[in-house]
Image 1 (cartoon, helix red, strand yellow):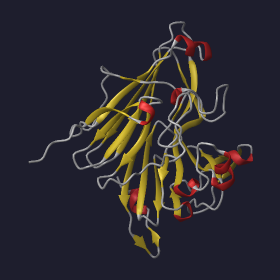
Image 2 (image 1 turned 180 degrees about the vertical axis):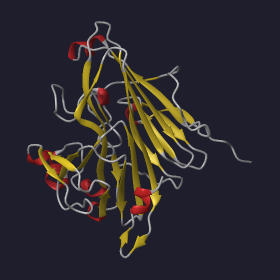
Image 3 (image 1 turned 90 degrees about the horizontal axis):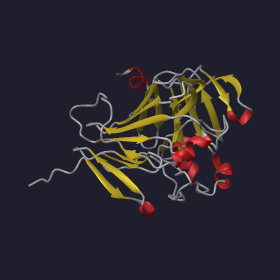
Image 4 (image 1 turned 90 degrees about the vertical axis):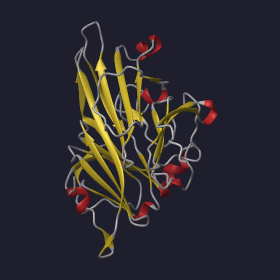
Length: 314
């Protein structure tokens, strides 16, 4: 007799921090920490972990968690007055028991709604009232969807402006065996060269050293091909025109206290983002940014993975 597993469960995580566990009937799962609204795990139906979290990650506020899917808000990187990537990933979120309606897959019950509102202390740092709602949903096929809704609730009539990114760390077999397709011919800002603007020349992005680039006005779909695992990650995004590609490589990895010296080999960040053109909301206005992640088997074709079916498919 089979026992149906609970689709949504509240549990204690590392250092006693609360987390929500999502489970789909076919076996896929995801974990979301209330600290940071931070997805730290996404497993397929075989129990294989698809996200990278550093073995040296510090699950202790106010330090952000290294890996998974940090939320960058209201600032990406150091492009503004805050500490790098803003403050949303350093705050405790609450479960939103009565969120506004949002379409979801009717056959899936594995989702959770979280909300972040500013405290009085927060208002001293960023004097704006807002509601940041996050839905994390696991589809029947194991797809992971994050939908962010940010609303300006200022009562003083003032607009506010922000940049945003889903700083997704994908788990890969070997960074030198990975290629990213879908960003060819697009302009990018190279963070290793003072954000100078270039145009991507190759037929795919491959990795032989540190990479930190912001691709501009990118397609809604990007593929990450892992030759060794014969797996392709597909990132679909909406409301997020830019895409960041980042790997710290060896020297930078050794300089990060919450990152293993050799762990750069096993991760790649491809981030759906809104950076080049900051978003401005007037009071009452709401912005929505969505990313859907899926992992599909890839087959070899002439010694290379064939991503075109992935990029051209639905």
